[in-house]
Length: 436
Image 1 (tube, rainbow, N blue to C red):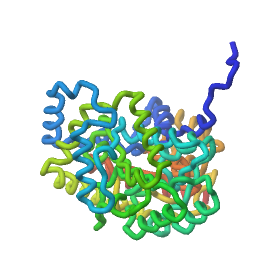
Image 2 (image 1 turned 135 degrees about the vertical axis):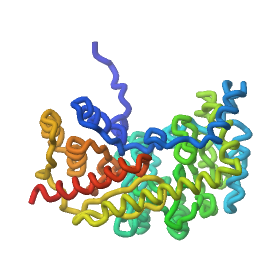
Image 3 (image 1 turned 45 degrees about the horizontal axis):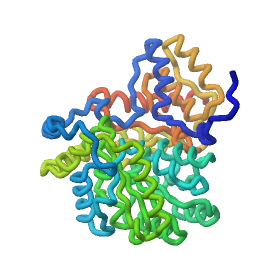
Image 4 (image 1 turned 45 degrees about the vertical axis):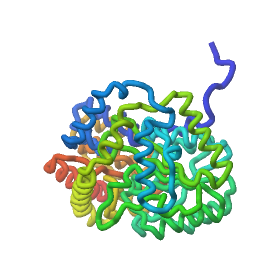
């Protein structure tokens, strides 16, 4: 039998997620007996973080309520939306109502809807390095390669606003600008003047803004949380938030969108209505986590909970930075938010002749095959896995043309975390030196 029609979406080839895909290779090495250390995915629970007892108690209370097992309103549990709208309005800046809050089954679900219901010719330009969920969804929606503006590693991974403005000016298909603040994968936190400059570009060219704020309350090194609603002025925007990283409760699959300035433009209003209509087709998002949102985030203990975690990640960031910063040919910027660090190899440092010693004979044989024709940073990552068992994500997997990788700051075992960064440093030095 042969299909009489091509049923494959034009953007199907763009649906890549290097953060998870690298695990497929890691599992091959694991099955050969290599002891793996997974530093590829941002799941604090998987890396051993224990949920605070008081948060567990609240979740238990929610589950004891019969309503937690039923459907809720399409846009989300009313009490949760009212709570979140009130929190937005406390900040100053743009005010919202509960009708401007729309729940999804995690930010991944929101991302799929936000790009999937855009007119196909309407493009959203995002940062590079790019977070794979956004870049893949935008590319799949359009059927073309994701459009990007540069984050500058020599300026603390800040957006290059000149690059962004020129790309917007000369590509009238661009309808929106994406930013992630704090950023994944770089850990950069954007100051007010940077956010205002980006908003100014959106205002000048009649664009809307998407800001992924999933890490908005994980900031440190003297930085403070700055919400998009505080700086966006009269520009239309969508802010994505959730509980997966800061509670943390990634398995809840609970995220939401804050719609900013919906009434400023009728086309934007119609677009937002299409997002709500798409949720009606699903009936609603999962009820129980939504019921927990105002009880956890509104608890008097929550600010101290956030401060404690921010201090923890600042300590680990400094630890990682100290271990990796003095390697010749490598640039490491100190993260100021989220729980990742991006390590950059300077131009020309990596090549296709470098290797690492691999004790496992079968792993060595497999590595020799899978590194053929891959980007230089992916080649390093494969050798790193086979040699040390450490799994990181190459920057080439983040829609980026620079060589490097992302590593997490999530390991809770102090001894293992120190070993990981020390082993990474040794491997980088040995790999760079191997072609000399």
